[in-house]
Length: 293
Length: 339
Image (spheres, rainbow over the protein chains, first blue to last red):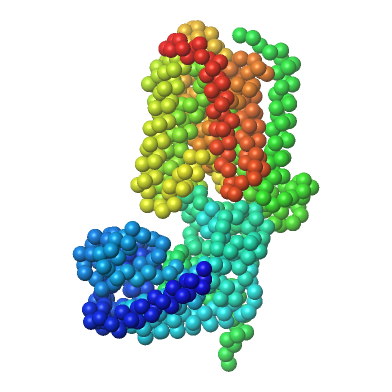
């Protein structure tokens, strides 16, 4: 499974390289690209020149799922369906492999070059997707710079965690617990934190009863929202007095969903927030490591 | 009108009260984390391990209190409506009251403007419950037969259901569909002391309104004209019962979602034990409702399943066959049409 994904991605990069080096139409210095997925939307905005971006999916402007929602307003809002993409005569369309299958098939039948970006579940996936978009947009140096920023943020957050294997649990609505095989899980792991979901036998994610979470008693909770507002019963789970008693706001690390649902430069921001929260929680550890004159 | 001997009635009520206590204790003892009765007892009185205390006092106690209170008010509302309408098939859920209350609560949820733990939720639920029962009695008229009442109730709950679905589609909350679907199934999972504080005052107010009219129900069994000649203001009684039911059911639905059929079943279980006097039926029906809902809520925690079964599903599975049985029993009255 993982093997085929890697081979798939390698083959994709080869095809991409051949295409970029090949025919005159695509080998333009700045191919015009449209995106029909919120994650590829953001990779595209991060790495391509504004003039290269033909349009973005509707969710690019949704502040709940898109970190770059503000910037997305500068670009054309596509319907996410095949029609308007075809009318715009793009060089390539970027998409995710599991969404809008019919649209992707339709575009391919019409001879549009559709590049599918695998769903990132590990940090290697994150780096690979950045490189892929950099190559496609003709700006590999920007991808390299983003990856370097990402690595630097990783090093900072490891330093903030200071090697202490803090047990953390990422809990969201209705008691959904995030496991290690997810972007957020991979970030926690890379930061040197122990994901308490492992103790529950949760690999990707799963629901847990409130009692089980209380009994597990991780050191910190990772949540996506710090407002004391339960707009529905699902959100009220995270604000249950049992959890608030054990995890007041200074035992909760807040990483909004828009920083972790997609891969791209927002993950660097997520790592920085994680690092800042840890530094605030454990000022002594930080003092020991960065003690100046 | 046969009255059970007073001694038998007292014995039945005492036995039922004991059963409710036993079920409440069992409800505190059961959950995903296994705790011994001693641990539960120690934690309940604020001693022992902190985690156990949180599990028992913050998670299980509110759930148990809500099961008792919500079951109780649903049972009492059923008995009150059956008494008011002198009709054994009357119950809040057949009249669309919980569905309408759910619509009120869902409107607040999908608007996304208020916290689900705010007073706005029970207020909206109570208002809609009041409107629905009032509309039902207005449509069906004063001496409506079973058929008219049930058809009008069906119409009202269908309308409430349709409007709920519409509200769900118009919501900006991406989780609205799931949240509303769960809401309509009814559940006591993970409710907290904040939910108890939200629902209990309304449930208590509703219960007090209904209990204060219990002697009037007794007079009403003689017929509305006879009752009026004995000094009962039937119009006012009707309004008070609607208010009591709306307060209780609305307050309950606002925190648990729709839980159906407790109000229908509980009075029927009590009638053979305490007799047919609707005034005497209110208290025992509340006890029976509390026992039924608490037992159902224990059952959903014991039935092994991948995801949690919603307690409203279980009460409907028990309640609907019971309702069908009642229809068979009342077939002659139903066949009579408009009385």
